[in-house]
Amino acid sequence: MSYDPQRHGNRTIEVIARARTIEKWRKQVIAGQPDAGMFAFIADEGEYLPGGEGTAPTPLTYFVAGVAL
Image 1 (cartoon, rainbow, N blue to C red):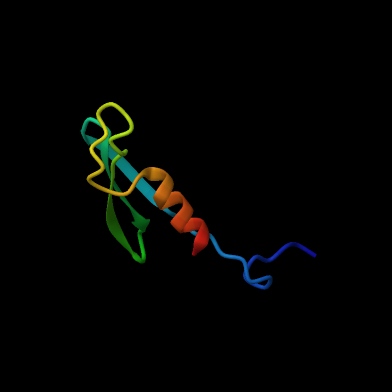
Image 2 (cartoon, rainbow, N blue to C red):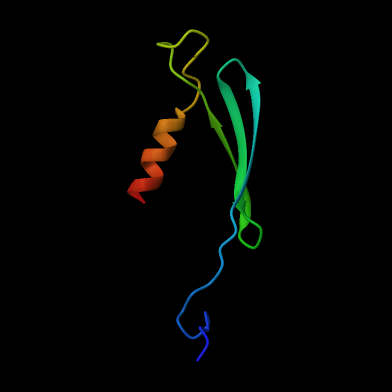
């Protein structure tokens, strides 16, 4: 008997992310799922890092928020 993903409730999930530098530590990521929509995220480091301006959440903030969800 072969393995049937549909029968076992498995499915493939595709997530795409494209990142670019805006300025200094500030980055923009366009991410999402092709069938559910794409979303823009801006991240920046705090002023504690040379070049960081604290204009957006840090990448670590996004990571921790994602884990909390």
